[in-house]
Image 1 (cartoon, rainbow, N blue to C red):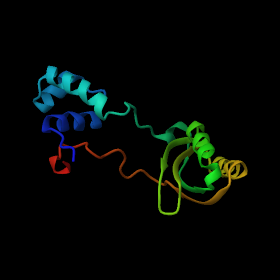
Image 2: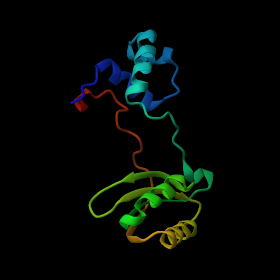
Image 3: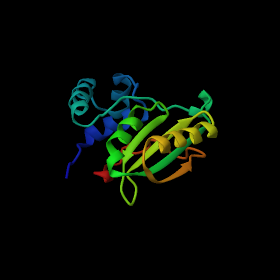
Image 4: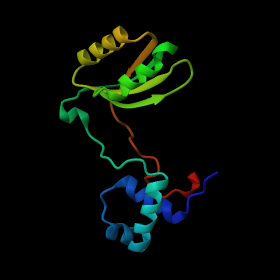
Length: 154
């Protein structure tokens, strides 16, 4: 099992809270020299930092419908379905899952009607054997893992 160094955990937890934090501020807050932070970020970026991004409040941008949608798709359509979903602009995240379903997608839409039209399009293009969707009513916690220095995770 991978054991993360305490220094790296501190740096990652600072990044998870604010990826734009200046290294000098991170150094003061963590007690780790700037040069060490820079070096560890360079190493970790290659090891396990996948992407630097920002979290958005979609409703403030006019997208009032978010849902997690799970799909079971015929074996013949899985690859084309996967490609379609990855490219579709309304799909924020896509996961391969188990327990009777193949994919879980987080969809972001302006209105419920737009989501219903999206589902109809998917069902007209692919052999969807089953689907379920769960509207996201409110974010209670988002991207909170490893935002605190909790060595108990490792």
